[in-house]
Amino acid sequence: MAAAPLSLTVVILTRDEERHIGRALASIKPLASRVVVVDSGSSDGTREVARGMGAELFERRWLNYADQFQWALDHCGIDTDWTMRLDADEWLGADLVTALLALLPTLGPDTTAISLDRQHHFMGRWIRHGGRWPLALLRIWRTGMGRIEQRWMDEHIVVEHGALRHVPGTFVDQNEHGLGYFTAKHNGYATREALDALIGNYGLFDVPEDAGLASTAQAQRARVHKTGWYNRLPTGLGPLLYFLYRYFIQLGFLDGRAGMIYHVLQGFWYRFLVDAKRVELEQAIAHAPDKEARIDALSAATGHDLRGFHRASPKAVSEVEGEQPLPLR
Image 1 (cartoon, helix red, strand yellow):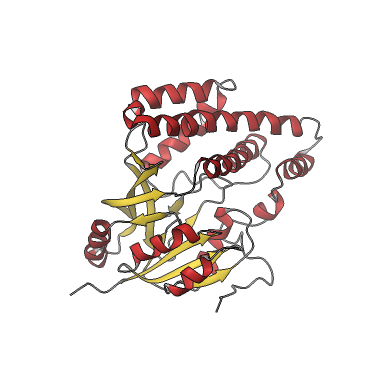
Image 2 (tube, one colour):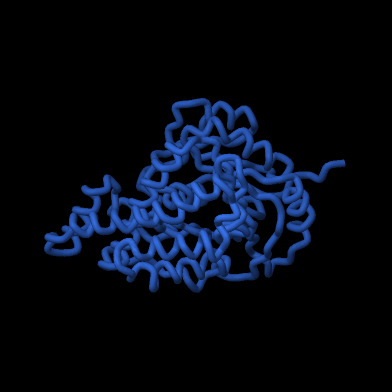
């Protein structure tokens, strides 16, 4: 007899994810007692697929991932014991589902968060080298104890206290779109990462420091390296050194042809694009006389609403006056 689903709510953000959402929902069906999908205006069949597979649907305009996800945590009435973050193009294997079903009910109150090892699949190949696996991510936490960092890019779930338990098993990031989608997505990522860097460098907003909160040690180390010595290197040198380290020292070349394409694009081209966008945005604010003018210049240059995102505390950032969740029937 199959085990009953856990007291667990899975939160998934979507926009035009018809290709992936069914796979994600099918993989967590034995695990979760509730699934919340927050859609930001899909024009394909995403909402119909999600509704047909039993997910609860909400709709809200998109600002960025952190804002949207925190809004879901704050406004969708999550009252299960546990909450999980899952992207629409991710899925869980039966081995991990079985492990979680057995483990979570046995955990004492001191364990407040669960990390998982995510595999990244690219062009039909599991990328095992170049520091890309195992990649431990905090993805499950006791409801009410976790929040998402309010950053434009590279946002993590953080839990303020308690013990972090790691659960091995099959957890896969597998986007079925092609290279055009990949490069367009990373172009947007680069803009947002450059924004985070300039916001920090110029002190444009009071961004809370989350280093002391519970997260995976791997994520903390990566953040320290990126905001420390890496961002101080001359333009282009950091991406080159990072790629060489990743491809040769961390054995990325063992991932074959698909791996070569992935490591060059994600390990060098993307990192170089972030550097280039930082230069471009520095130029955009070069003649701004004060902080307010810099904020206006960055918003105009990127099309992102900086004031709208940073107007409130991380916990309340998405609590727009008069805005209520809109369940889709």
